[in-house]
Amino acid sequence: MGRRTASAMNERQRVLVAGAAGGVGEGIVRQLLLRCPEVLVVGTSRSEPRLAALRERLGRVDLARFVPLVAHPGTRAGARALDERIAREIGPLDVAIASLGGWWEGALLEVDDDGWDAVMHEMLGTHAAFAHAFVPRLAARPGGLYLAIGGGAALVPILGSSLVSIAGAAQTMLTRALAAEVADRDVRIVELIANGPVRTYETPSDAATAGWLTADDVGAVVADLVAGRSPCWPNLRQRGPVITMDPRDQESATAR
Image 1 (cartoon, rainbow, N blue to C red):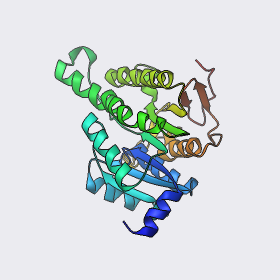
Image 2 (spheres, rainbow, N blue to C red):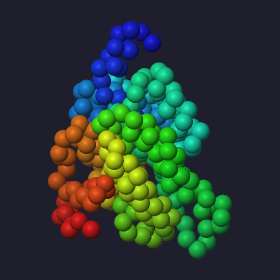
Image 3 (cartoon, rainbow, N blue to C red):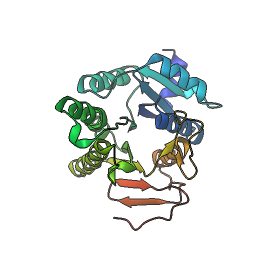
Image 4 (spheres, rainbow, N blue to C red):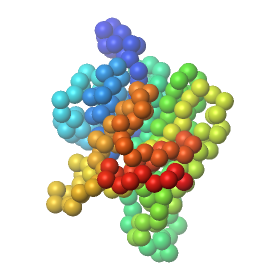
């Protein structure tokens, strides 16, 4: 790494986005680069081709402030290896964002043990592994932010996708438990729940998406949280460390 690049990294806030090449992750990366000019974004994916495709889709952003890394931070060993690599090659992190997980469809009472374990790992275990590696690292530096991205399935059962709701609700409790455990440390623990379907580059072009959130809507709120600004989105509800982002045309509900 050249001296100029290293110097530039030392002057910037370092933000890690795990799951950067996913639909929501892309919006987060783009908005961080557009709205936070002082930020260096480290984005991970398990796939080099997906990272290359992400760079092509990001549009007119400062790609000199984007560092793509192939990594698998959804396991204890993978998250630990990524933590060590970032500390060695880039420097201490200021923010870690977990945009992890996927989707599942099926009948709850028909899921066998292997299916249950696989879904719970993908949608909950990945967050636990990522937090295990990066919350202590952030807590060792003043002013750190750990931000998990969740979905509205955590709030209501989604028929035909109930395991997503179960894992999402557990992820929210994981956030609350982490916040309670590090309450005496100078680190913020936050979960942002996108309460509704999110339109991303992966959404079919013929889908009826009127009223949906977009990945860039979510990314804009994340960028404001990272920058310490009041979020730009009009329909936000907050209870403790959990912020719920409702669609723009939905009146804000009373905080639960």
